[in-house]
Structures are given as structure tokens and as C-alpha cells.
Image (cartoon, rainbow, N blue to C red):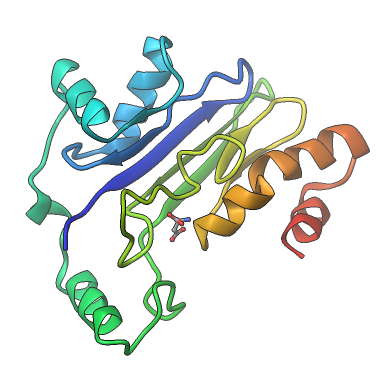
Length: 181
Ligand code: ASP
């Protein structure tokens, strides 16, 4: 019944990245991810350490109720009573992904999510795993993924798409289709 959040942002020009995993106090996880990128000392912060980073940087925090909605509470209850699956495609909304291309040809990717309903044991999804759910490389493209994170992590989906574009000269859509096949 508690909520934890994953987010990542990546700059395709420098391949600097700033993911956070399993944070529970950041009002805007993507802002924290950007701060991690700008800070540059580490690439991935998680759990209590990520929450501490939020506090030390003076970033905006929110209580757990801020993230909770009646729809998500109901979804969790349905999952717990075996009436639905964690990634029911009819109720699976909320992950936010963005890719951008600027006028100088630089790309960037960002992903922010609460993950999947009913996740346990400190489960981390693909969004903050650079190369799985988020990746940006000026030499190829920028990717932000949504779906069952375990799959994206195992396949290294976002990096794999960029690698096909960069090394094989594939177009982005066919490269994505091939990786997801
Ligand atoms: N990819 C996310 C995760 O597995 C979930 C989603 O995209 O809805 O954490």
C-alpha cells in the first residue's frame, strides 16, 4: 500500500544520466533525476539515499497521499483479490515518457513512473535503469519505454534500439519493432 517512484533523464550529447529509483518523498521525481545528472558524482541513487538527496538539495517533497488516487487504490485491491493482473492494459496509465530533439540535433530522454501495481521487495523497474527503459545518444536516437519493466531490463531495450540505429543504420521504428519482437 505504499508508493515509490522511479525516474530517469539522459542527455544524448554527453550521455550524462540522472536516474533515481525507489524514492518515496520527491514531489517531482524527474526534477530530482535532473539534479542527479547535474550533480554528476553518481549515476544512480536509490531508496533512502535518494530521499536524503531530495532533502539535502531542498527539492520539493510530498506525502504519500499526494501520489495516491482512488483508481490506483482500487487497482491494488483488485490485484490483491486476484481480480486483475499487475499490468492490466485497461488500467495501466500513468508512466510518463518524453523524448526531445533540439535544433542542433541533440536528443534527450526522460521517464517517470510509479512502476507496476503490487510491486514488492524494493522492486525497481526499467525506467531508472539506463539502457533498459531510458536511453539517449546523439549518434542514434532517444528512447523512453513503458510496459513490464522486467522485460525491458533483461533485453536492455532502450540501448539495444539505439545500438541498432547507430551500428546497423536501421531506422528507429523497425529497430524498435525488432527489439520488441
Ligand atoms: N515500465 C514501468 C515499470 O515496469 C511500468 C510502466 O511503464 O507502466 O516500472
